[in-house]
Length: 309
Image 1 (tube, rainbow, N blue to C red):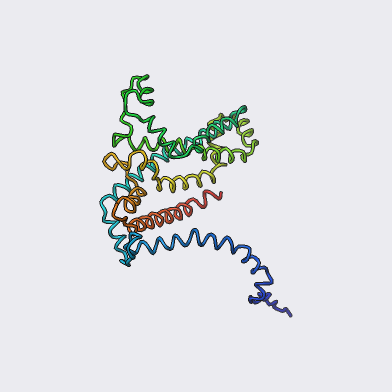
Image 2 (cartoon, rainbow, N blue to C red):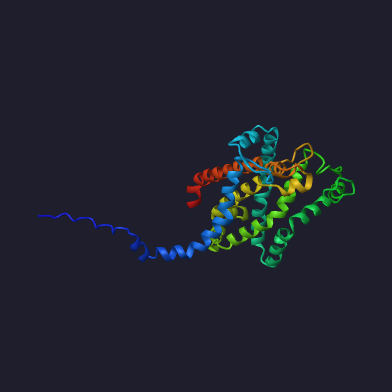
């Protein structure tokens, strides 16, 4: 005669059992972090969402107007131009700024001597204050024939270029400076990731007759796949929030060719001397944050299997 064994009963969860299992001590340990995170991160986010539903200039009493700020922002003819410019900046930044740090890091990893000096030189632009870097590049972009860049172009027979004064060349000029300023941090990340790649893999590739580019394609890139995915989404988020370069270089010009989403938010909030429309500014900020959050979720969902294999 066989007897059926009853499944073990799950102990009933009670407040007393939760405390005995360390739940209270864990909560007390995390409480300072939760308070700091809530006050300095979540509270401003909630206040921004509330402000996006109000008409306020932070001087007069705020009035609730529902979704009027969102309607106003979506009907603003400057929004489409700013969105296209932001996408153009992101495209150029990914096209030139994404592969350059990887190539430099791979080349630096092959260097056997003075690698520390090269790493310091690569990271040097990151420690330059952004405003100082922009002012420095403004000198380089001098449209005069005797400007630094135009002088170099003159040596190879290319006529002077109106770097920041032309609608066609202004955005690529901004991307060039932004790539120079930010590449150092990404290079250091790639160099750190390259140290985790097993030398045995390169030795095996050499035995199979692989050259440097085949080793990069078949060994380095697959081993850096997770890091590449993270830096890719971080670069997209960073370029979508570009503000400093168009604000300091061109203030959105010429002819709004470098006006971006964040520059439009700034104009809503601070360009009116009689009091900014902070409701519209926060409404556009909330829409940008929601778009980036949805894009990031889709990106991580689509690349989940690729990054884990």
